[in-house]
Image (tube, rainbow, N blue to C red; front, side, top):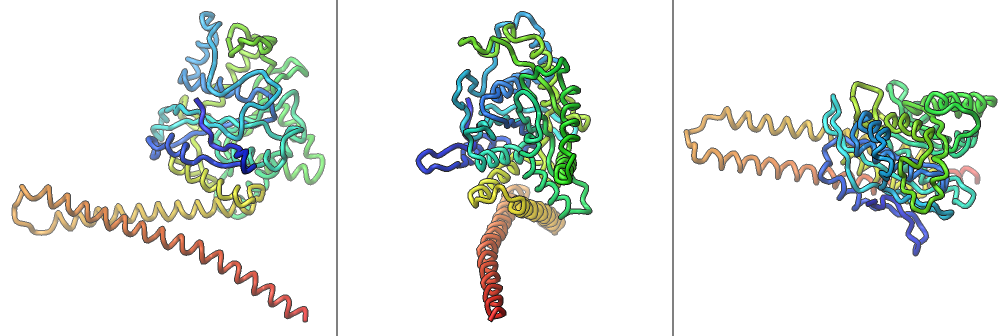
Length: 423
């Protein structure tokens, strides 16, 4: 079963977010770290089919179990499911879908990690709206810790051009934070589907094609700047070439049965999917890449929901294609999180000091009352903390409103001064 994260409102003719569904899905895991595997690419290029193999891997739980599943002849008629994947000329996925099952892995350092998988509608095709394509791609990439970029046939300069917004955003983050060691985005994996230009397949062959395409793109100053920004904006860039799954796709009853797919496709599948679902940046074993913010802080499910809400606000303001607006929004979230962390630290100090004072104060022995007294004190502290938290939120809301008014007054004043100077 899949849930809508972003969908089209046909009546109003606009894209809308479904935060309630996301919040409900992640509520039981809100304090756990999160990993997000998403995919983007043109219409009808097999994105959902590939994501269903990601789901199969997560179901298997490890590279070894996944390989055993693929190699076991008894699984020849086993199917894959999850996201809707059918043979049709019309697009199937609308907006961005999130698979409704949560997978949980154990990171060797950070503990429990929740893994969610996203699927997106086709983008950058002849019949697609360009601004909408940019928005869908932006939301998918900004939310993911591992982003698959699905390409059919061959990689071209245009495929890199589609990353210009993110390259500009990444460059801005680094320029605005020159003393910080950071990489704005995480992992990006290009997947060239239906490859038939030579016999070289897999990650090594694909990454060589990526490097060659980047080199070709660097023949102009603008292209060289784009390539450099892409390289420095992503923590890891790789590419894989894959054959077409075979004539089995034309069968009406085909649902991913292993025995019907071409051997070369299965071989590259066995190499690519474990790579996508494993974090090779540390000693984490079989755990997928943990989602981080632009400052490389690990994100919880709660943080992820807040990030989706932030992107919703940027999108609804019509500024999703503006690196400046994205930076401003991320900066606000980053500062807000820093303030919350500082508040939580002060709360812990307050609680610790209060209990120290209580425990060290001279008291007559009254063991039958001790439990009730401690309970009352604990409740009083919680009430004080919540009151202070509410007061802080009210101040922030008031600041946001007055900030907009001050900006408007400043702009109006500048306009008046300019008019007077012209006279």
